[in-house]
Image 1 (cartoon, rainbow over the protein chains, first blue to last red):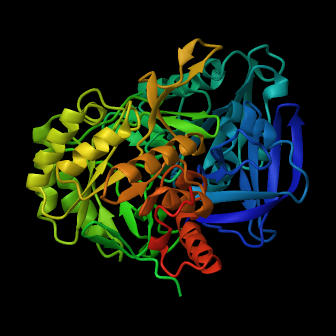
Image 2: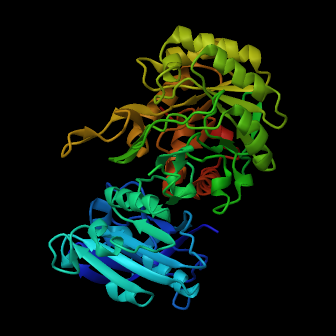
Length: 254
Length: 303
């Protein structure tokens, strides 16, 4: 069930000047939250920011009633969300959207870049719960753009690429040696910049592997009312906030 | 106890607060957030004769105190609404009011004739003011002769309450309002969105795929309020007022300017519970200011 609920800022974990994890605490928490779900966050204390910001849910703790968001400060709203005081009230509409479907058998590859890594803590845990052997492939420009690898390592193997070679293999995620030679994954999950996801989707298609991608389209309502966030699919325009954000890449025509 | 009932021509609403077309889906999107039975009415997403894909993404841009949209009437067509959506929402104890669109007068008539047969639907909103479609839409609503022609044609095809939704993108909205009143409209709703535009200076590209789109939100409220007041003085039929209503005070201002009922639009995206707060706010205001009927607020500015 969708809720509208006030939370308080519990704290931040600063990953670097532009990336942070915001943890909010509520008096209660909806715990039917699945990997890929997001929240529409009302940005407090910022005149000029009119709409809520859709942000993927990183993780949650049903004992402490906390919910975490990995946020990259790229605009007015995401910068302001990084400047709140402890105890400040933040209103959420959550949980929203569909979720990744965790496979029950076989091997999974998760490919993330930029802020697209947010849903993968939860997805990794869900796959681990299904006893799936999971490989995370995380890309960044430099080693300073690669985050949460310790958390991912708790549920699988972690591979890294950086464009400058400062961590892991040098190049883009699609250049990684995991894609060379024997290549036996049963499912690929991806979230990040569109060009990266499209490239991963082509690799999946070439190898006849099922692939799911989570889109980051701009949204207004987040609940399927305004139809602003559509993506073209082989079945026409689909609403990303309710029919997504997770789509099979075949449906996207990628 | 305040009497919240208002009369939109032949149509009675249990209270003046409705949700605006295109901002509230078909209602069920909001049922987790509040009891929809409390609403005066739900103007559901715009319908066309045939399925429409709408415009390409991006369709939305945030602006100062508002937003631009260029959705372009994405919908599955009137038959799908009647056969698959309406049966799921008809149990709500509120007026479900379809918003009718077309590229030609014949389209408008065809959609209207189908809705005229649907038991339980007591009113339609004739949308001659959508700024986001290439053919029809706003083109009908910005010229007096075409607004009159489409209203007359739809009037002949519709037996129940006909509300005509007016465009603000005109030199004199009162002329159009008087025209559709003469053509048989039972009420008018105003305003639809203002034609606007946004550009990303860095990329030197427009922010909408359609370049221009419809501006909504508090940015337009003073202009919408002025238009409601002007139309209130020009016509006798009731007005459903909208344009940037974010809270009960805004809604009361529209009623004081002459709106018999109001529609909450973009505010639904910010606070999905806002409509019910507005109903409660209007009731409180009436109690605190000695109005025993909400309808006594209509046009009650002391100018």
